Image 1: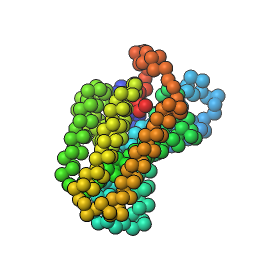
Image 2: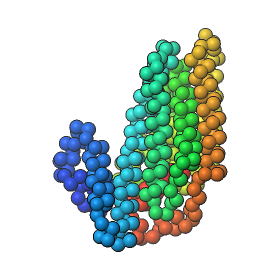
Image 3: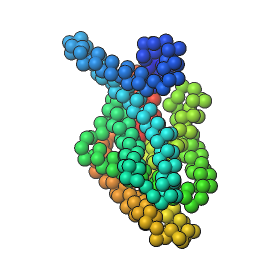
Image 4: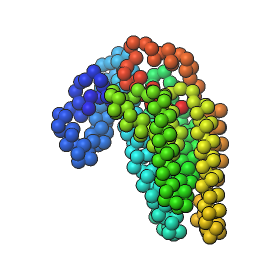
Length: 315
């Protein structure tokens, strides 16, 4: 309510309404539309203001504020995708595979859901890098396409593997809970400081644990080469074990069309996703001088928004 990414020093509410009015808007599910309205209003204000009204420094600050607002909305979309869309998609896959039948509309619906989840990550990454003054923007065109393909393939294959484990036994939800718990502990060990209070920070780390259950996500903006290698080793093992266990423990499904199809999608998606991952970070990833960026973190004139966004930076 106090500005993008929580302005701890206070100030007017972002929508210009009272706190009670904002509570009513959120109660009726209008909070996200209020945020978009505020972003559009600020954007049109900048567009229709003559360039002579701002100094160069003021114009830079205004544009950065707009990028921060867009990044905040993109982050909300990302959290919504993993807290709502992914569980719904997993349930839908479990039901469809269990019945061994699916309509064309359901196929399109699930394919669009996979793409929407992957794009939420790409969109957040693009907005975030553009909002940080000390980080190079994510290039459009081929780099974005390769990164999107990497996320789409890895997330799709991983969710399909989880769905097969659920078909094998509904008690696999216990294993998923353990994975989420371990991911949350790892996030806690990183000592994130995104929220303004300890209780909210614990909730934030639990949410990041959900994201890490399905895809790799760097929350500290630091070198994560070792962490990524460990994560994708676990990812590869899961994607191999899931279809193998289902084929061994349920022999009647070995010749089932859905198992052969899903197994092929898991294997092909895993290989293609990891190839795109290596290709992106070797050839297409914008290079930063992280030592200089880390030194800027200690400057007193760095804004609270920039510091909080940097802590939420994905590699």
